[in-house]
Length: 371
Image (tube, rainbow, N blue to C red; front, side):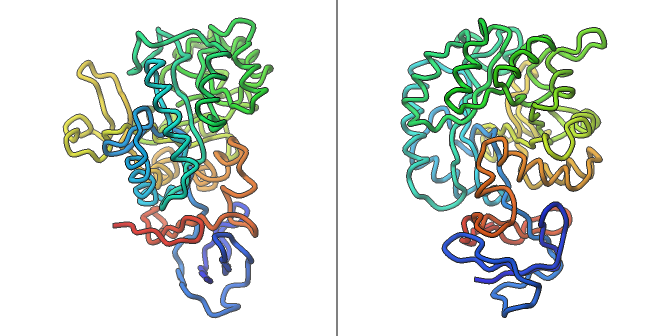
């Protein structure tokens, strides 16, 4: 199959290009019009497929309480957001529920299915702070324990790629060290850590910040804390929920400006009630709240989030696109096959207009239904 456009996103800019696709991969990049095209996108953009590394679920599909059928239904939905790969994200819950969920997530990851690819698992719980637990279960939180993490990784078949940790409770940074030794990325979050504690965690292998601005001690000019560390430590990737509700768009502008085009990651932190008509009243402002007003997940679509970062948070287009493509791919270590349009990479592609409204989405070269 050959597709082409006058606006193909190659190395951070738009160029006229033709893509030759075979066996789910990009086999060649050719000059626009070189061969007869099966699909000419004209002036529409062709972008790399989007990657959401922090999403808990969609429309009654929940990573923390999965079934294989629900996970596959979720995979079929994700291209409707432009998402071609993602991490199934669990939250704080009982040991028993984690032990039940992880083998099913392993099965879903290892089963060939239609739609977006599940790259792995993101564990947002249980190793977080009681003070900054957000909407997570206060009574299931535990201290960071490397042995528990390795037990979970065994149940998950090695598919846990990232875990959130309140590093101020990680004695001698043993949890961070163990995770790093086992290629699990530690994201600092739901935490009241000081700047120095985060800096020390980075020294021992921490590489990310979970939904920057949410679930953390607020920034203070004499105590920059975890938020200040997120912005100032170049080693750290920082997630941002790009809905304008979880963080003000001017705050997203600050985070994106400080992290630049290489270290910002757009996430949805979507809840399983996203697009569930029974929860429409809870999500009428575009995110979901508990009765006390606590946010418990977004209803954001990733394509809308990219447009928001660019147009509403006033970030450069390259920063906004990278935040959902090459940056999460590099963070997860899958950039050899995901995150950009290049020969040999998976043919994960989004065709859209300049407002990120989707026209076509391809997952490993297969066109996905968008209705």
